[in-house]
Image 1 (cartoon, rainbow, N blue to C red):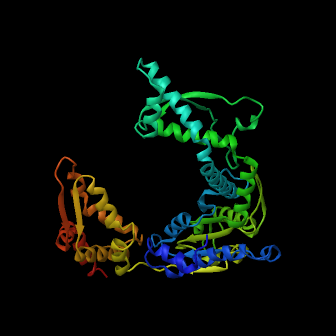
Image 2: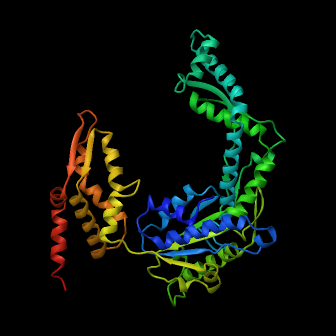
Image 3: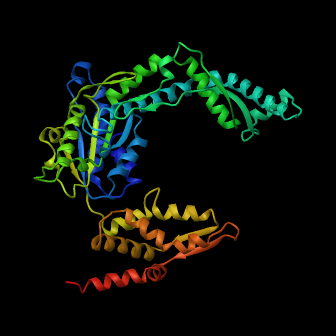
Length: 431
């Protein structure tokens, strides 16, 4: 990824309002991966990534930064929940499975790239198979068949939704072992038994996708794919650990649950510090994987983590609470703004929805007040308010009526939340 830190922040700004410190920290960390890749090998081995831990209340953009990063970087990336994992010896997932998941992402990424390169080569083979399948399906239902006509219609894209019976490979489903990697009994005997096939009914478009993947698999060198996937995982991999505060006990806590949480931290430590994890594609060194952790830290502090793990996250970033101005910007500025989402959904049912500026002010003020007077859930409060505000419109909308313009102004918002506003006014007098 050859984006400068400033360009990375600009990309994140399109979707996330505020939180400049967090965006800068993440952008610098990503750019440093690129800078390190251009260094001589001897020096490259000495430079490890500086992991980041983000602290801030729920709903202020921690997870959204991770989601947008995943789309931005062309590198193996996974987001995991820290609460999934248990200490070794307990029932649940062990922490090494996060590395196995990351390798799976890298393998899929490399396979997709190789398949894209091979598409032109396998396209004639796939076309012949589709023509044969369409002809066979039509003959089975006593229809007249002209192979040349079918081929022309297929190339013109007229048959994409037609259902056909096609012979595809029967791939066994993987079985998940509790606390360990996925085990596929079928893959254990690869090369010993012939590939089984079965007939499936599907659309031509879906059949083309499956047959293309099958033909590409036949000519792609899997050993090269696995080697490249492991290299990318080790050199470019990024793991985002969400809800890390949930595996940290309270200050001074010493009950059994806190002991178990500390055990998970101790298990995560060698992964973050640098170790070798065995996967079905080969051994993976975690020394140069970038880890970004985040949590709300309501009942615990970063300082409550075991000291060794604290030291592996040298960059700490605090995210700010959202203000009324932030809420107003969230409603209108991002490319996927909340108002745009609701307007687009209702346009399907012939409702042309518009929000006035004073309506956005009123919604933003209500969101900020709700977060102050009750639990602070950040930007998620806007969805709660918008669902209540547009409930009647959503319920009565139908694509059988003509296109109708609906303007949401300040009076509409105030009328929709009379009772809520009254509750806020009463709270002024409660000591």
